[in-house]
Image 1 (cartoon, one colour):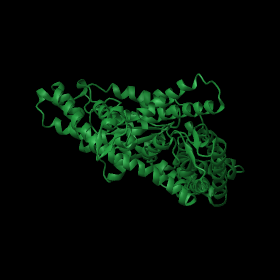
Image 2 (tube, one colour):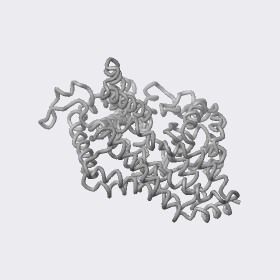
Image 3 (tube, one colour):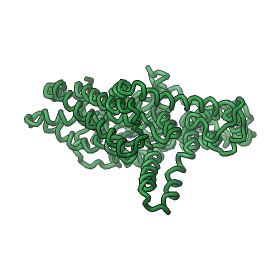
Image 4 (cartoon, helix red, strand yellow):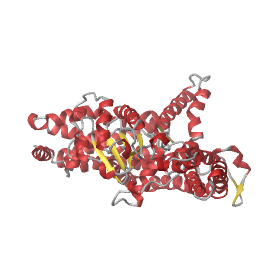
Length: 512
């Protein structure tokens, strides 16, 4: 196992409070300083940075920082794993630092990925307001592309950057939708349920606009134009438009249609920027972007995206209903490596599409079993080291601190702090995830669907979001059975085949 994943930052792993300001200040120079950071975002556990020159990242020094559990660096991004809670505070401090770059610094970009402030751009780049807009829609500099980057990985990471900022709203609205469903089923507070339904459903009704906004921002267009074109997808008036002999429906194509519409808008905008005279740019470019991309959305994208969305829903249902146990085994077993590489966020469009179509995603509960296998493996490591105080005291402390987050579905602290550095326990954790996934998939073959009405949480935190076709009691029982299976198999496989003592001894010898 390479040294880059051997060591978790022990002060944070032991539960010592981390000062967000000092952590952000320590991270910034190690990723190349403010001028090297082109965008800042975060998910539930990671500070996600896009960099102008990835080669300026000092990975070893980053991993040594108190509070840093690990890093995932690839292409033009660097993801710093900090854990739940602390990541939001560190991100806010990091945004503050990068929003006020040193005088004369070139290439600094506002933390939300917006266009650079003219005051921070080199004189040659300054000019009229139209030129400023051109800067916003310009192609990323060649320095952003890292050696060895593959087109597939680049696309997946950019898709993740579009959808990750939406997760807090998806979680909040999903929980409220579940609460409202409970109130409706029990007949409690009938006067409140219509209002609660409106609060919970409003975001999902307009999610296409947010997807369009983020897509344009991520791919170099003007965000508000991307949102304006994507809004066509959910506009009620599209019901009067006929394309390919079929009358369109509001929302047809869902988030996939919104994504494609915003991509088309970004392409049209960039094309216009290079051809429209500067004096007319501020008038013609927005108008042509909305017109051309809007018509393309109505007379092409919505129809095609609608067919693709329907196919995704049909395929997901067929996969679990026909090959449920096998599909669950594969999905549950492979999800931890996706989390380790930071690619799991690329599944968000599929989950969101299923939620739009069916009210829940049947894939998330299966994938959540990977976290159960991770928890079982961590407990096995803890038990294995109980008699060797000198060798396992530090690691056992790390497990005690990270286990609550793991039970709630936040797996990175256990991945980077326990199983991945030890090597074989990471594989046995995947075995537990595969077993739990097969358990849930088996019941899907019997016709008992287990779904989640929102994405983001997993583990125990997913219980309030569970939905299915057999009632909440049966759905919760199947999901709980999957968790228990994942815990048990992950524990047994790691205890029997994890090679825990030898791995910890080798790790200690390597680091000393």
